[in-house]
Each structure stands twice: as structure tokens, then as C-alpha cells.
Length: 256
Image 1 (cartoon, rainbow, N blue to C red):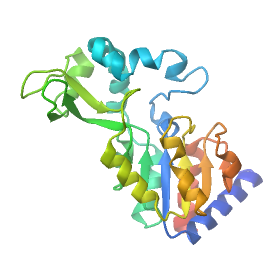
Image 2: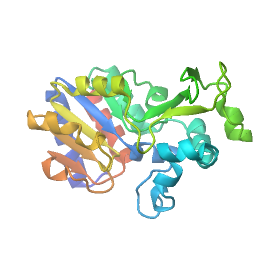
Image 3: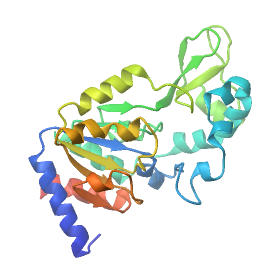
């Protein structure tokens, strides 16, 4: 992080933040891997290099084999509920609290942005805090259901009718939550700086969300270990781990 090139990139990023009036962050799995949550697409370690997502994490798989899907996701849920925010999450929360970041749009379902202190968070792929009954479609809070599920494999059932509960996370083949997407798009309206952190930008529609803002002149900073399709449109690109960039960036923006 101390090389002349990286120091220069940090300083140029700081200038973009200081001139911005409405900046937002779009985050992906890469911001949570330092917290011990595996990502999905990294070569060799990503979950989708080991499992077929349409077999274990699709809406059709849940409809026909819900217990198998729940059993597959159980270890991941265990990692998520025990995870703590890392300095990259905290950096974004600090920027928001200081008025330097309008909010976060995240592809993650782990709730770590909120745990870190971020207030304006749009979880476009859902979260584990609630579940929907597959029979009566009522929603239920999961705070009392997650630990028995993780520890014993207890299948969550609707407190109203006894039907099977599906966690409110977006599976393959399932539509994104309409209200959340609308909120995210509203956050992007008039945005003059987009910070993409830890996202491969391979999953639509999240991957295309920044395009409108860029077409209207917004600046773009990308912090991701691997290249993305938007690198060529970025003003600044860090092919580095978010945990090595975001804390330093926040320090410089807020204290430099």
C-alpha cells in the first residue's frame, strides 16, 4: 500500500471524493471475504467453481428440492451470522457518517454494512433477517430461527400456518426486490461519483446499475482484485484488496 503508484492513486481518489457532492458505493462479495465469507466467482476458491448454482441456489431447485437447498446453504449461513465487519465496511460507514457518501448499494446478503454502522443500505439480493412462507406468503422474522437452523439443521416453518419458510435472499431465476431496486436507482440519480468495491460486475442487473450515472458524467473508482468490464471507463482502478485500499482512502478523505 506504500508504493508510489498506490499512494498517487489514493491521492487522486481523495480529490474525487472531495469534489463530489453525491457519491455512492456499490459493493460485492469481495468486501466481505476478509470477514471470512467466501465469494462466488474467484478462481479456485469461489463457490460457483465447486457447485452448480442452478442446482443448489436457484428458485426452481428450491421449489422442487427445498430441503437439499437449505442443507447446502446452512454452512454459508453459519459463516454469515458469525462474521464481523472488517475495516473496509467500517471505512464506508465512516464516509457516510461524515457526509462524504450518500449510501451503499450491495449485492451481499450478510448485513455487515449495517453492523459496521452504515445507515443507507440497499440490499438488492435480499438478506437473512426475514423469510417468506411458501404456503401463505406471510413474512416472518428469522432472529429466533437462524441459530437452530445453523446448529441443528432445524427447517424453518411459518409461525402462522406451518408452511416452509424461504429466506428472503434472491436465488437464481428470481426477480430482485422491486422496492429495493427502486431505492437503489433513486440513490444513483444525480450521482457524481461511483465507488465500486469488491464486485466482479458479472451479475446483472447490479453490474449495469452504474452505467446511467457514468453516461451522465459521474466519475468512477473501482477497487477489486480482478479486472471488470468497466475498468476501461474508470477514472481510477485499484486491482487490490478492498481492505488495503478503503481504510486508507477514508482516512485521507476525512483527516487529510
